[in-house]
Image (cartoon, rainbow, N blue to C red; front, side):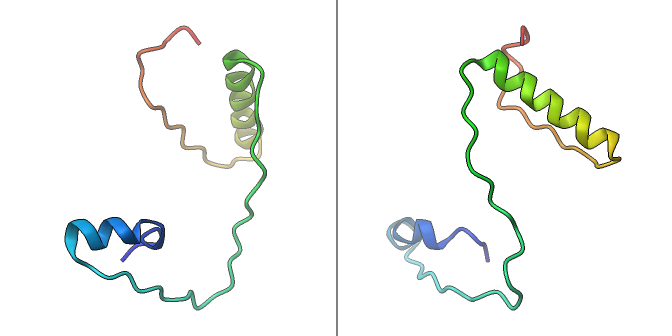
Length: 75
């Protein structure tokens, strides 16, 4: 069971010979999808990330920071 299987329905059918059945949620969606934010530079992007982390921390909100890799450590 997953919330993202419908978008990959063809792959499930081709590889695993499985059908995908959508089961609607029993509660209305409460997640707010914000518009994408585009930055002119990588430094600007990471500065915005740090600013957001600081603001969340000041409100005692936990923050989970994920990275793709640690190869670029000069940011």
